[in-house]
Amino acid sequence: MNSDDELDRRRERAARNESLFRQVNERIDELAQKFQLREETLSCVCECADPMCVERIEISHHEYERVRKHPEEFIIRPGHEVSQVEEVVHRETRWIVVRKVGVAATVAAELQESADGD
Ligand SMILES: [Zn+2]
Image 1 (cartoon, protein in one colour):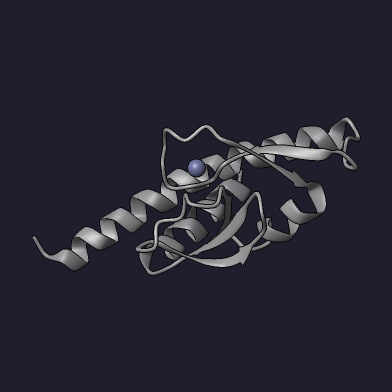
Image 2 (cartoon, protein in one colour):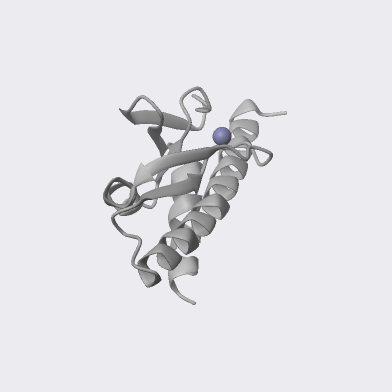
């Protein structure tokens, strides 16, 4: 098997998982806005590439929305990053921000567009 193809597939799969978690987190954020909990900490789910990961991340709304502006960036727990599909662009003690690389970035952007479109 061509290893570039294999890498592309891993990246695509990782981006799909993470975009799904992102949709969950955006819904949590919407509900928080609706109930005017914006000053409170948001408890979002880890947006890492592992579909079985259910860890929560405590993050302020302000910080979450700053990351969410970039469709190819995701908030995950430290240590959950996969160097082949993403690079760490920001580190905090309890969470880090990763940016998709290669085909994963393209897939993440496309999924974000289709999520915004409905
Ligand atoms: Zn995780």
